[in-house]
Length: 384
Image 1: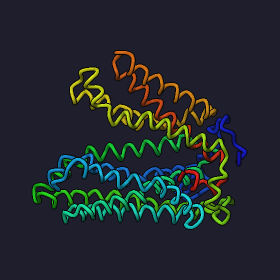
Image 2: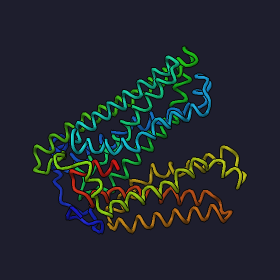
Image 3: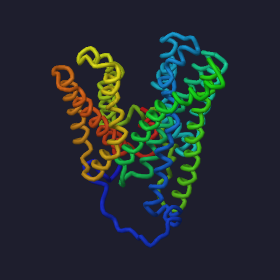
Image 4: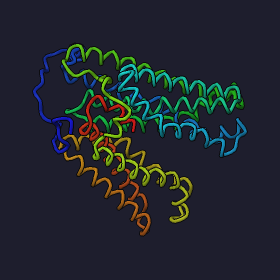
């Protein structure tokens, strides 16, 4: 462990507060908890634009195929161009945050990449250029995943030893909110644009409108950087950027406990996300659900995580013992799969259990990284 705080310690405690200060004083004083909570707003919204735009294709899948006259394979390639490069580039993004940019410039840089990638993607649709859309998704992917690394590093820098698990839960909640808002909003946006445009021009215009959320996130990154500058000037803390010591080879020297965290993450997500991607067909074939009901059952995990993640994070902060919560989340997920595989109990029960366990694991597992590695290695660790 590189820090004095243990994962068994509760970190939400009753603290004395001075209620005589004005609201303006609390917002402008980094020594006040209110300043930290004010910054948390922008911290959570940092990746809102990337999560909103990431699933633009899913929200408009039929329109993509019809307007661009593309096959399902070409459509799914939009996600492949986003995902595959990040097997390596996400780690490099974390390294750049630690070694080159620092967290402030890194967050702004990767937010700019997200915005640029979404613009290229939108103009590719507007001009009916599939290759250009693929380039846009590639750029968007480089920025999006590395921006999430910067967001996690910000959370540790501001909230380590305070409400870290709650913060990770809130970040997950806002991320899922961005995805949900996209699914709700993009259809009506497309229909509104369709009144004046048609075909790929309509699709491209709708995607350009979605780009506004990336501009919003870039603004949040800029404001957060200013708040962080003021915080480090007034409060004597270690600089967020301590990149002179970190080397790429240091990743091979990370402690075994950190690699266990990575293994747990990969194994757990492999048990959840692939099932969700195939869940609709499963519910229709085994339980004879209608497509609408099957979709409802399949989406419960994300819906619950949007609300339960902050609550789970608060509980972990209040009680401590992160590893026990992680163990409980894994056991609950195994139980939900067993219910779905070997019983005919209403599958909504198992999916609700899976949603709660997913929220609990996300809120308790990722903060443990900050307890294992040094601050100047956080970006690289979260990138891995």
